[in-house]
Length: 120
Image (tube, rainbow, N blue to C red; front, top):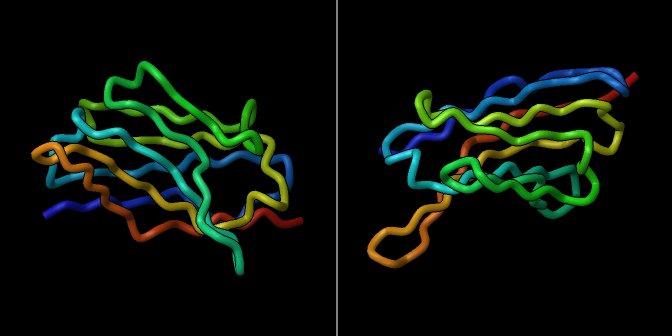
């Protein structure tokens, strides 16, 4: 059974930092590309960052470049999102997503999300 469990969300002041974690199980983590998405109230879910299975390539949304860092530890089956210089507009539910190929078909899985609130 595939599980993605996010943690590390919370309330932080503008300019602060948080580190999100997503622990994966039920599939071969080192074969999956991993992503972080976020969804703010009344907005569509958007891609924040992704990282390929080896960790050798990452991509970021323009809105978080230079502030957020995605990384992964394949030995721990965990992907991280280090968030710094947080802004009010970073407030959202953050979701972890895994993408992998099963018999040539791309399948993906979502975590349940973790709330990040940036407020003074």
